[in-house]
Length: 145
Length: 145
Image 1 (cartoon, chains in turn purple, yellow):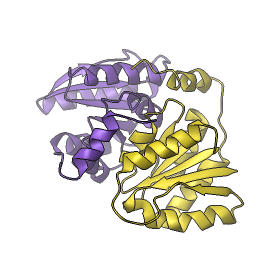
Image 2 (cartoon, rainbow over the protein chains, first blue to last red; image 1 turned 45 degrees about the vertical axis):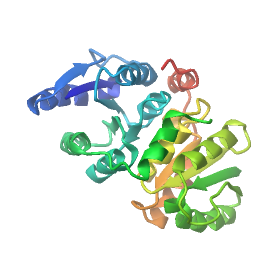
Image 3 (tube, chains in turn orange, green; image 1 turned 180 degrees about the vertical axis):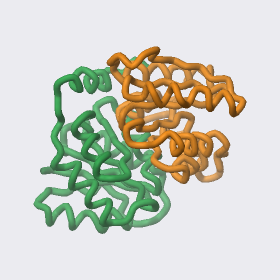
Image 4 (spheres, helix red, strand yellow; image 1 turned 135 degrees about the horizontal axis):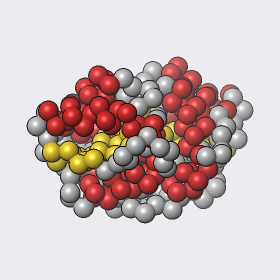
């Protein structure tokens, strides 16, 4: 699977830990930066990731900032992205099952690396349930706000 | 303070519990629905809340669905809204302090009423820190994705 990953400075170290893990799991990882922990603005990297996923260049995106909140807001500006800021694997599963989420957002200052791995793993293997959730997800692609 | 609240069917009961609590706390509460726990689509109520907050008709919004994920995605389609799906009061505080969030999203099937109250209370009293966070928040209002 092609998985894109991006962060801000606060998420840089966790991103660096996760890239080899995702590779070990057999995925092709596209690291969209940043390339150091120098201060950057999370919206820049959120938009970069959103555009990449929206273009179909990756199946899933992993977005990381200090709390996961700021970068999740940025990614969700793109109607083709459904970004879930999750705090546990069950939330990650629901994000795939009910919302067909294609980006997962994680707070590097709030979550340890093993919990992040568990969330991402659950997210990747999750499957959209379809059914009644389909029309709702479709409405997320055509916002009226 | 004027606080708007909206949910889907999964969040209806929690919304009904929170409205009197917010009123007791001295706020003016605008309940944007739904009016029963009949099945609805969370994007409809997320967009309704987003438009209301974006128009300046409420200072803050409270968005509730089963996991908090779907409705947070919907609200964040509006560039004037910054919706944080939170799982604990510290995340709620960070959402205000760093992201100047104006909508808080809660998962009614994942969080008990007392934790929801603690998150919302922390969110409401929180203050945006400004400084380096200002330009980042500004970028969320002018998405490039």
